[in-house]
Image (cartoon, rainbow, N blue to C red; front, top):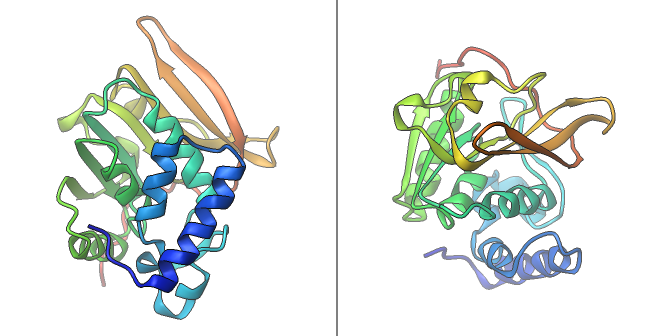
Amino acid sequence: MFGSGMTSASARGRLVDKLAAQNLATPEVLEILREVPRHVFVDEAIAHRAYDDTVLPIGFQQTISQPTIVAMMTNAAAGVADRSRALEIGTGCGYQTAVLSRLFDEVYTVERIEPLQLRARRTLANLEITNVTFKFADGHDGWPEYSPFNVVIGTASAEEVPTSLCNQVALDGRLIMPVDNQVYVGQSLVQWERTESTFRKSNLCGVRFVPMLRGVEATP
């Protein structure tokens, strides 16, 4: 499904081996990261750095997340009992979207920067990924028409988690996203698990994500 050259496959394998040594994710998640070609989601000029464990620019002052963080967020998402439907807030280049597409029956993804969304659509189409639905919109509102979601993942940091996103999490589902928190160098990656009466909160680690902004940026 995910075609790539031998060089990139070898580099990807070395990266995943490093992630495995850190016990960041289950073998299932690591195998998905081993298969999804991160280099096709970045510009050709920096593709040689695609399998470094670092963030990389994707244009429009946005970045593709560090593989370590992708592994942790995906591992948290994979822990839900029901993998029917996931919502991603912030499609970006589509890398995390592609990873989620291997875990969930349906993935819904929202992006506020139209050129990024269009590029991600093309990339996922080239990879023959067919279980992702895209929306160009402000991510603060989520996608209520298709809720509830078993997992909601946010890929930008909010000062506070939008209530609308919390309302779209299914019972026993999870909301995973970075929020501003001075305890963890300005931001923390947080998981909330919905129960019958409340959300159970877990701080996963300190992170640095781009801010979650309101409004949209359309193609000129």
